[in-house]
Length: 312
Image 1: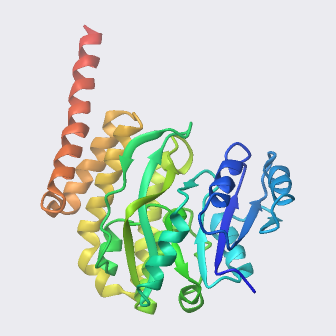
Image 2 (image 1 turned 90 degrees about the vertical axis):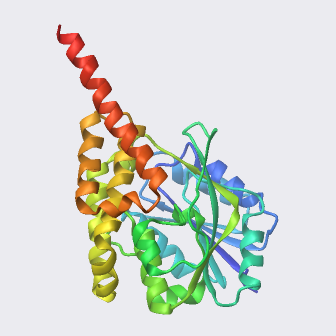
């Protein structure tokens, strides 16, 4: 009989972290699963590492294809999956041992539930906890809530009934940012399924100072692509929420710019445009808006003073 849970790990040049990620799967309290690890054309030792691990565990299947991007790679895994439930893990993230058990129990007690997720703890590149934990809304989530932010944080946090992919389709292969959020919006809207979180940390998300996470302009462009896709099937929702949702996203980019230590004017530009988009962000999460504004404009003022002193 096929296992109830199918796990999909897309891997690209992940030789330094993939073994730990797979170990976090093998450490699960639920052991009845199948794992598809798909090498997306890596140029390092990722494939060799995967093959060595798979030789020791018959539940692990390794697939390799030419580089096609993370969405196409995840989609290939979905096509291979046999389980009633499908879940994902990125090649540098980690699961806590009770993650699968918690989601299975959540699904069994909520038959209308389409997607389950949990809280996320953030770790740095060395795998050490940063002290930050996701605080997203967990219940009563509607499409409008997803336009404001991604409550799941990362694809590694998704636990999905297989039939939802059959009804709503797979991940969009023409997106390089927010492809998981685009799928969530589409799935919830088209299937009328319920998405709900568990109020416990179930995974650890590795943050990065480089790559896509730091490419703020690309993230802004990707967000606009997301809105365009949602508008195709829910135009009234996008029209109603676009301005304030854009303001919240720009506020996030301003906060991200400060955390990355980018030049202060970068954050100021994002924050200025956030206020220009919709001043209602002062009333939606006012504490976060105030704190982000203080840090963003405070950095700009401080560095301007320091810079001017240096010229004297």
